[in-house]
Amino acid sequence: MPTHATFRTLQATWLENALRQYAALSEPGPGVSRLAYTRLERQAHELFAAQLADLGIPSHTDAAGNTIGELPPNAGPRPGAIGTGSHLDSVPHGGAYDGVVGVVGALAVAAAAGAHDRPRHHPWRFVAFAAEEGARFGQACNGSRMVAGLTGAPDLRQLTDSTGTTMAAAMAECGLAPHDVEAARWDPRDWSAFVELHIEQGTVLQDRGVPIGLVDTVSGSTRLRVSLTGVASHTGGTPMDGRHDALATAAECVLGCERLALAAAEVNTRITVGSLTVEPGAITIIPGRVVFTVDVRETDHGRQRTATDAVSRHCRAVAARRGVDIEIEELADTPPVGLSSEVRSAAGDAAATLGLATAVIPSGASHDTQQVSRLTAAGIVFVPSRGGLSHSPDEFSTAEQIADGTAVLLETMYRLDARR
Ligand code: GLV
Ligand code: MN
Ligand code: MN
Image 1 (cartoon, rainbow, N blue to C red):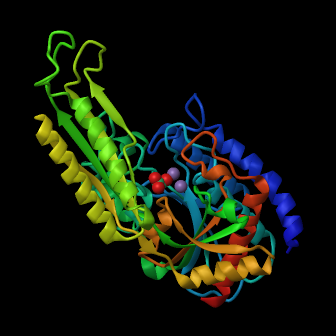
Image 2 (image 1 turned 60 degrees about the vertical axis):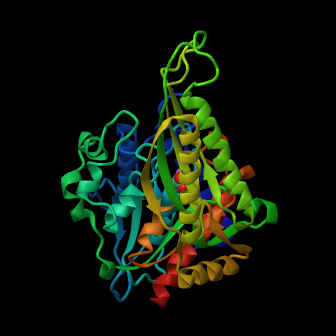
């Protein structure tokens, strides 16, 4: 095996190049736009499969669109795979690192493990999950939810994007098999452990000057779509009293969401209105209809539900006072999860062996490993994000930081392989 210093230098150049290849698969415009279940997302999966094939690792894409390759054991075989990977879709105008770091990290691990004779008793699996971002269909972690049996064929006909396209239709358009996603389910007996490499998407590691984060809890997320229907009318002819302005109502709701989250700031409740559409949307018409989304993030599911209920009550009260009709749909409710202490300790030992400091931190964002943790012992390793920026074209981690994360990932896989 190469020393960590050599591995880091070799990997940094390779990783930077691989990240660039994926970033090129984007709609035009700032940042990376490669939405769930689109041709571009499929091209990224084809690139992953081709890169695995270059390493001599066969792969397949399942009915849900997840791409999975496997390196067989090179020593006395034991049952249950050790897996790693992340996702290849992005938010609109997102960064080049969210998800992709864990996929190129998996490829780097595959290359290093395949090239050396250190014993691997378990099959090692490398996974690119489909449709992790909730940006298109509201619900996050779709590919991993399907492997965990949490989202099934009937759900795919209910989830829609902003144009009304169902997830099932988008999947079929990409040549996937939405009617048969049951076939994508993973059998827990076929798994031994899973570890995902990801950017932190926060500032804790940067602020503490620590290169490696070990995630203990992944925040949950409850997502709402709020539709307000008021009365569209002439902005000049209609007096100010007696209006039923859907946008003014939404404005009060949005600020109320912010106030609720700020009031719970000591427990780190995060509430965000991230999208809002106004109809008819003309300078001379009082807005008749507004639809906005709310994303409630928490590390405690009780607080997550309490905050969501408070948001609903607040919006209903504002709408009632203003004589505006309101409909609130819950698009998703994913509870927080605690990750495996065994995987965290293997990753901590791996980092210590490499001379890299660690911090145990929660994840504010959702991750596929949240769903995989229902099937097998699972953990997440973070590398720092510059300025904590993510879901932004300015998302950035240095190649050296990612190479450190990759080295920890590789060593963690070996340790899990030996312990299980
Ligand atoms: C996934 O990126 C999320 O929205 O947390
Ligand atoms: Mn991600
Ligand atoms: Mn993301």
